[in-house]
Image (cartoon, rainbow over all chains, first blue to last red; front, side, top):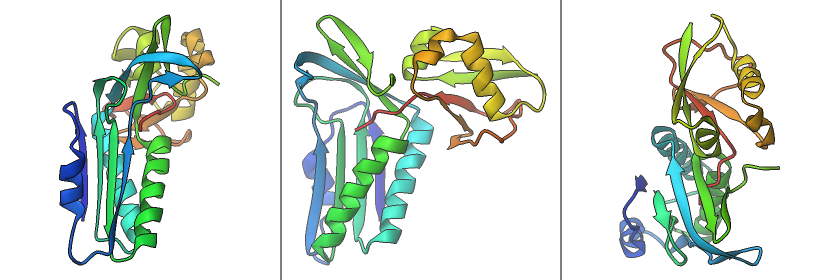
Length: 138
Length: 80
């Protein structure tokens, strides 16, 4: 089973864990992305996330379905935040439950690594002296 | 034909709008559209890569664009 969400409201780690948890499973793997307060020594004031929502949802769904085909999973959830986030806030949660832990670890890693490559979501890092779109320049 | 493009992130900022209209030749391919955008907007040369999505899916350069496609210009993604 797959649960995909893009939201401008804060994400709840506990509700993600609750959704994937099952007595059929031997473990849950959770990746929580958090906003870091510095980049290359410069203080980050905030991150601004925007999404091409329709396509971002379908690309996130593809990742979850692909992971479910590659590994023996019980459930996989991918939630992503949009809007303005400050240090310590959570832009992304991936939660995976599986009968055996290797599958959960590997699928979770696959999901976040692939999300960063394919899902049309962008973040702008805002510093005290300017702002940059992450990954936009060579 | 006239097409409408959706722009996001750094491309939206360069273009100053989240949608732009362009007059293009019938039968234009995604690759030709990418070249046209780079020629019309020199700022695009500073971006490491530009992909195009048609109707919510990444499109190859050979794909032909039709006027009622939902067309999105996709600069390098940076979610997570």
